[in-house]
Length: 603
Image (cartoon, rainbow, N blue to C red):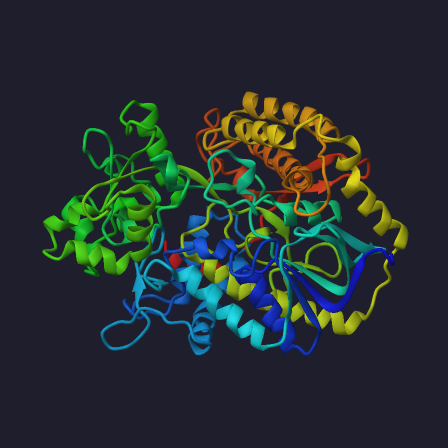
């Protein structure tokens, strides 16, 4: 092990997005030594893509809002297979976490009387998203980074973890490599927090950047942790489909929150055609009523464009399949129409949505104040992930914690917009707090030198195989196959075909290789990423094939209805003793009597 650059800490945080930074800050505040790893550069976390706002029931715009309404909205959006304790903690604690960000220097938009301004968003009963224009995630990262750096946390950038290391059943560290120079880095830690984000790069069309290869999901799985709800992959309804320069880039839900509407190629607002019974009493019946709600009239109901993401995505998919889509396979998202209502519409749009305006103006020569955007569903967020304890965020593996998108439970079958950012800060804090406590109480663990050497040898195997088989080709094939067979609309035969193709790809990944040296070598990095991507893709496909109903983001053409029977179960994916992947039904956690009453009162 003398060949590796070695580091010791009490808590190792893997990931430097919102959840990782908040976990590192809290662990450091607990008086322990913390190292935080970032796969890319500090500040480039996927959190910055979250533009619309952070959901917290502060009741600054509508006094009727409360943690109970937020809790009920989250459970309803998740189709009641959420972990109710996580949903309760999230709803109760998110206002305090937002005020904490403000205390640390975050500059939120304000109401006229100086309070934090909140906007409407899909699935939320009241205006609930505290925001900074359409740059909320960026402001959150800026604030957390600045605070974390001043706490003396040790940050290691462009560092990718190869494997988690264990001492018996307990996690005791990780082996990683420096992406720039290629040498191995060995981390000895008393506790590990996974905050690695999502899995979007396993699909062809995604809003996720190159880092989102499901590393944390796969690392936890191979370390023996349970994965939960892996069938629930969220396809954000509004990713750009044209022009090519912006394909896949997210159009924040804030565009619809500020009055943007969805139209088909006939110019009709098709979202009025399909309003679920669950939301009928909250949804506008006509365009005028929807506009009043967007502008803040409490008596009006929300426009149908602000229904839950899974529903909006399927409605768009339906229009495209019926031949009513845009020329490039999407539909039209139009906010320029509000000039009919506001004399200063262009100025209003540029003020409320500055990033959207400048991004598309410069990258696509498209002026959203004058013309509609072509949008369609894009792989965006993973509801499934590491199964954790609601209060502590510890997984089924002692000493291994998870927070943010890599953890499961809060969002159930479908995440509400804005709940991702509050998820990061609520459960990032809890993961850091309890990881520090675990580290103090359990002390140092032992590293097994033979296991470290074996992991390093496996990571270098692609160089021995050479470049005969191209890892980028296999990556492209995987993404295309997952998009086609396990995408937004699923059926049994196609998912079984996907599982079969994944087995073939798992054999092929043992043949892909690379040439050259270890200094920044993208082919080598892709060889290692593929291992994670194949693990995650198989977990998604197997869980999706097992759940024979449609619920939330999981829509099956062969089982188009929700099933009362399946509503009683979550699915757990774990590594069996023989190394195969097993899927098991587990009963959904029942809400307490108090929480059941809250749900009933806010249906």
